[in-house]
Amino acid sequence: MLLVLSMDGAQLYWNKESDTWFGVATLINFAPEIRHAREMVLLLFIIGGPKAPKNHDLFLFPTFAHLSACQRLGLRIWDASTKAFFDICPWLGFGTADTVGMAELNGWVGHHGRNGCQILCSMPGCHKPGVGTYYPAMLKPHSSVLPGSAHPDIDINSITTPSPDEYNKRLCLVLGSTSNHEYMQRHRETGICKPSIVSALPKAIPVPKCFPADTMHLFGLNITQLLISLWRGSIDHAQEDDPATWQFSVLHDNAVWKVHGASVAAASLYLPVCLESRVPRNPAEKISSGYKAVEYLVYIFGLCPALLYRLLPQAFYYHFCKLVFGMRMILRHHKSKDDLLAAHRAFLKFVYEFKILYYERKLTCLHFV
Image 1 (cartoon, rainbow, N blue to C red):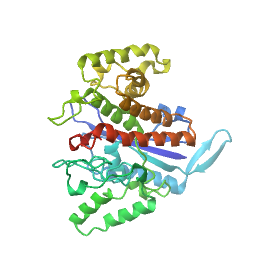
Image 2 (spheres, helix red, strand yellow):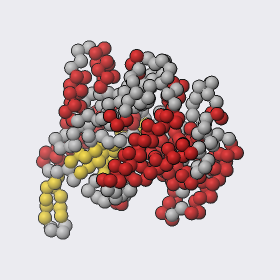
Image 3 (spheres, helix red, strand yellow):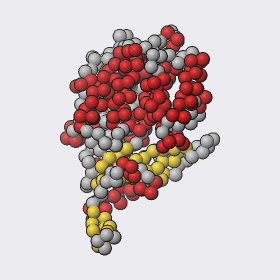
Image 4 (spheres, one colour):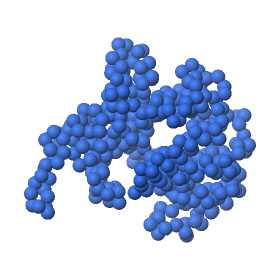
C-alpha cells in the first residue's frame, strides 16, 4: 500500500479571513482512472484557521503518529474474497503540495530562497538589487549583480538533485549551527531550514526523493499564467521597457486579444464530450475571474498550438511547441521510458531557450524566469 499525501490551504469565504488547510491521501495502487475519484480519496486532517498555522508540524503530528503506528504494527484488513484478515504495511510514497505548502512539509526554504528549487537541485538563484526574491536564471545578467547572485552561467545538463546521503550531510550542517547568524548563512546556502517530519516515519521513500515536482500547479497555473502575461505584455516591467516592442507580445493589442478570446470560446463546439463541463471560456472576458486549471490546460496546450500558429514569431512558436510536446507526453496514463526521455529533452531545450528568447540576460527581465 503506497500513499501519496497532499496538503494545501484555501480561503473558504470571499470577504472574510478563513485560511483553512486540508490534508488528503491517495493510493498509487489504484489505476490512474479511479485513483482520484471522490470515494477513493482519504481525508487526513483539517486545520481550521482562520489564520494559517505558524507551525504546521504541530498539526501534522497526530496524522504522522497514526501512520507510523500502522507502519510498525501493520494495518489489519478484511478480504471478502477469501473471507480472511491479512496485515498490510502502508508506506508513504510521496508528499505533494504547492510551493508554499511544500516548504512547510519538507522543511526547505521555499521558492523565494537562493536555493529554492522544489526538488532541491544544485542551481542557485539570482536577484535584483533591493529585491529579496531569487529567480532561477541559469544565464548571468549582462548588468552587474550582487555578490551572492554573481554565479557564472550554468549548464542545464549539469544540474543535479541530492541523494539522501547528500541531503543528510546538508541537514547536519544546518543543525550543527552554533549561532543564529551561522544558521541563517547555512540554510541560505543549503536550502534547508529544518528536518522534515516525514523523516521520522519508519517506512517511506527517503527525503528528498519523496518530494517530487508539483506538475499540477506548474502546468495548470504557473507556466500558463506566465506565458499569457508575456504574450499579452501585461507582466510587470521596467518603465523603460515598452511591451508593444516585445516580439512575443502578440496579444498586446486589445482588438487582437478580443478576436483571440472569441476563437477560444468558439472552439468549444469541437472539443471532446468528456470536456463538456470544463471547456475554456473566452479568456478576454473570463481569465481574471476564476479561470480553472483545467481550462488553462485545454486553452494553452490544446488550442494555442493552432491559434498562435503564424501569430507568434517562428522562433517563439517552435519554442512553445517543445513545452506542449513534453507536457502532453508526461500526462499520458501510459508512456514508455523513451517517451519520458524525449519529454525530458524537450523540457531542457524549452527552459534554456526561454532564457535566450524572453529573459535575454536583462536584469530588468529577471522576474520573467
